[in-house]
Length: 136
Length: 136
DNA sequence: TTCAACTTTGTACCGGTTACAAAATTGAAA
DNA sequence: TTTCAATTTTGTAACCGGTACAAAGTTGAA
Ligand SMILES: [Mn+2]
Ligand SMILES: [Mn+2]
Ligand SMILES: [Zn+2]
Ligand SMILES: [Zn+2]
Image (cartoon, rainbow over all chains, first blue to last red; front, side, top):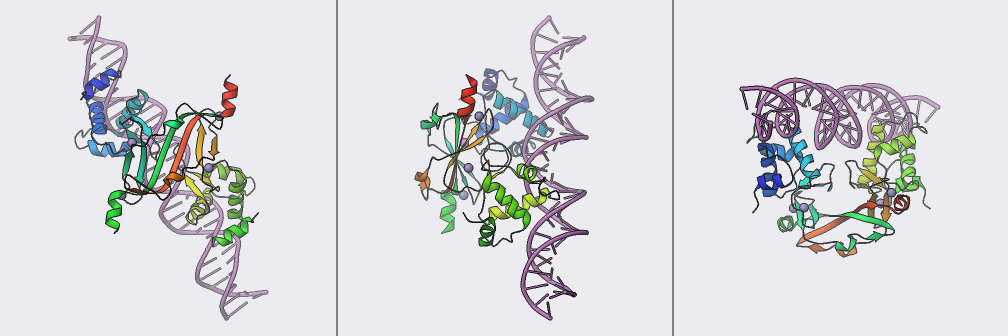
């Protein structure tokens, strides 16, 4: 697997310690975290870490195409490293966000009612597998 | 067409002047407005109107099932009265939000990867019909 | 070793939203 | 019609995710 430092260099980003740790976190934990979740997860490891650095870094990564920024359901931006086409499901009970490998290619580069479609986001909501088990 | 006051009464909501005006606005202008847009549109008519009232009212209407609250793309909640199944398209140029009558029934009451789907939101993004014309 | 460019940090601020308590309004009982 | 508790509205302060900005720290090439 490609190293975090390699990935950063390929995208013309200097691999500072903070940037490496943040990207590492996003590659390891595919939980679609918010900026604050990332900050909380890393601040023990980097006690001087600033939230501004997390926000700056996520902005840089998104602009350079390493990350995707998602507006899923609530009013916070969530970030993900996984760029394979997929859709999202959020459990209304445990709030976990799942990736589902359903593709919606039929919208890609298409006109719908005369509008040119450049992005599509499919967000499902319900009760997840695990929470369904507990319910019974 | 059913009167606004009838609709409110059917949902056990006292038809105050503010509530009537707010619901009237949402039924007349299907633009998926934010709380602030509604406030701006009505404050000339009701000079004493408070933003808190708008927020309170939208919360009440949503809880009682008169309105849908949508997290479409940016970090603001948008409200709509239209509850016919449809999907959304936002123009990246003029920022208008369009309703598209595409149905995704195949998710309704379905299990996907073992998860029980209760809601689905399809959000498309691109350049709208009108803006495509201007572009050339 | 030097120094300009880059990166990180802390603080103040912003905009959408919520909490809360006071004021105004309502409507049903007396 | 009057009364008064319940409901609704209002204004203010606070909250929270995010951004602006300037100072401090770090880096790396000359
Ligand atoms: Mn995902
Ligand atoms: Mn709509
Ligand atoms: Zn769950
Ligand atoms: Zn447009």
